[in-house]
Amino acid sequence: MPAFSELPLQQAVFQTLSNDATLSGMVSGVYDFVPQAVSYPYVTLGEAAAHDWSTGTLAGVDYLLAFHVYSRSGGRTEALNIMARLYVLLHQASLAVSGQSLIALRFAGSRIQLQPDGATYQGVIQFHALVESGS
Image (cartoon, rainbow, N blue to C red; front, side, top):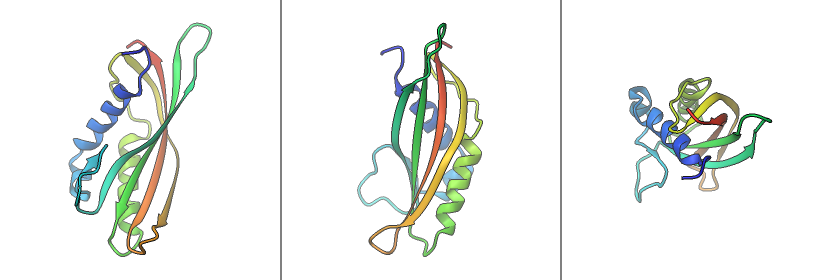
């Protein structure tokens, strides 16, 4: 595996979300790939972007991670509550990232909108993760 790969960070985040009893009680699951006929509401791992964050002495990457929340509860409230739980779990969290050191994990922004089907709300919440090579 290259010195920097998003995979260890994704695994640490996925484990944190999947192991939280409160979040598990709010959603049918947290998915990287959504199975067919999944029940609402649910969370997916969304887009990710990586940018060099190296210094003269340390190799580092700044990741922007997105999480999507899908709800059909008849309003925004359910999706917003799930997004709030994601914030609690991830903002300033200390996660063990295999082969890397997580320096900071911070909320970067969010949005929510009604989808064209008129029944599904999609919320997106983003976090910046600053990671250095080595543990």
